[in-house]
Every structure is written in C-alpha cells, then in structure tokens.
Length: 328
Picture 1 (cartoon, rainbow, N blue to C red):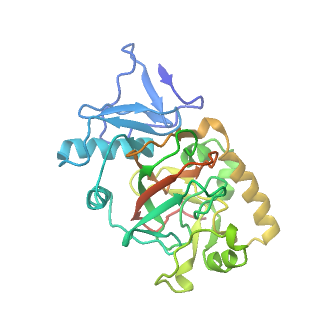
Picture 2 (cartoon, rainbow, N blue to C red; picture 1 turned 30 degrees about the horizontal axis):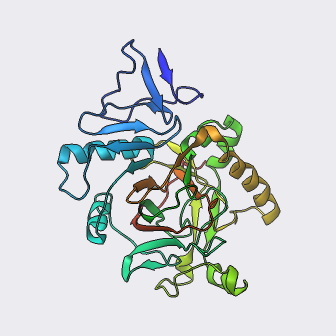
C-alpha cells in the first residue's frame, strides 16, 4: 500500500541505493515528487509539498560537512529537486565552497555579478523600484537554456527579503512529462528546440530607461555560443528519468517547425507548468539558502511586494549538455 503526497500514479522506484522511508509504520511507502521517499538518518528532511522541495535541518553550512551527511544532502537534492536551508549566514567564500560540492561554477553572460565576484550573480530589487528590474520572467522557466551546457543547479541565498511576498515557486518537469498522454510523449521525444540569447541586450536597449532590466554589461561569449539546439525532453544522466525541457525563456522554435506551429505547442506545454499539483513555493527569509536543479525543475520569482528590498545572491553550477531520448 502506498501513502501518497502527489495525487497522481506511482511513478517508479526509489532513488538507486537509497533506503526507503518507512512511512507510517503500516507497510506503506511515502510518495513525494513522484517516487518513494528515501530514508534519512543524518539530516532532518521535511517535504514542502507532494510535488517537489524539502527543508533540511541539522546542517551548519559554515562548518565542515561529514561525507555521510553530504551524501544525504545530495540524495535529497536528487529526489526533491529543490532543497532549503534556513539561517545560513555564509561569507561569499563559504557560499562558493558549498556550491562546488555540486560541480564547477560558471558565469552567466546576462546576469549581473555580485560585489566584484565574477562567479557570483545577484538578483536585486530596491525598495523604491516598483517594477521587476532583474533578468527574470513572469512565467515558469529554466535558466539559460541557450547555453551549450545550461546550468545544472543554482545555489541562492537571501541577503534581504520582503516580510511578505517575493517567494520563489517551482514546478516539477518530471511530473509534467509523466502526466502527458503517450501520443504527446512520443511526439515530444522526437523534437528539438532552438534556444537563443543573442537578442537579450538589443531587446533591453529598445525599452524605456525606467523599464530596462539590470543586465550584465559585458561577457566573453561569441554570438554562436549564445544559441544552441536542445531536446524537448531531457533525460537524467544517471537515472534516465525523462522530463519536459520546453519553456518560453529564450525559445525560438522547434527544429523543422514554423513559428506559428511552434508557438501553438509551446503555449500548451507551458500552460501545464502552471498546474498547482506540480508546485512548491519557498518563502525567503534573511540567510535562507536554496539549491535547485535547473535541469528538471522550472521556477519563477513572484513579484507581489512593494516598498521592500529583495536581494538574493547566487552561484551557478555548470551542467552537462542535455541528452534526450533516442530518436527514431
């Protein structure tokens, strides 16, 4: 018998090598994020929703992390896709050191850097600014899909956060894909997407000065490096689990499709990410730190606050080149 957090079907087996959470003691498994929840012995883990996300307790990221504890953090990251740590007053060096546990840090051509650190970015809206001025989107998206190797994950910490509002919401792209009909899965399995960041700065310059985004002023990428083709369905490099990898951010068209055809399918699959049963939502507080999987999770900031400062700093971990299902 299964005790479910997500209302959908049982979607598979636990993460490889993980002990299964014993559930309520009646032989039932706890299903979170579409899979049986692993058991954790060295960290506290509290799921945020049935779809994705957890808060981790019992870890001080300013101190050395035991290998066994780090292994459980990584297990939670793979299973829940976004992990949350509270009250982590890290220095920039400590922030970067923890981030490197997930992989090599990378720069982003469009995101403004933080305090002279080229490998750290900031998301900042001052209290007097009434509109969103950061490079973001008012819809669910993955970051920088136009890169050859888009980010694996983002490690973000709050320096200042509104008392109310300013949350970040997440949508589980595994669950979106797994709920599609077999016919649409088969279609998307064969498709590729052109993502491009070539026109980011030109579009911004055309806006009125008070409406322009706060972009990085210069970068070292060529025009060719700002555009890439990726699969519409992405497979996890270890588990092979499939997720939708289509979103409006930097989307140009499906390969072999005209713009009108591409837009019609894009609008439909983008709408699926809005469904609440794929979501979790995280409230920022000062020194809250998040790590989210940018490959299999979509996210968006919620700009529902005024008159308060929201200042987040982040590192970005470079990912692998996206791999899709074998095409027939």
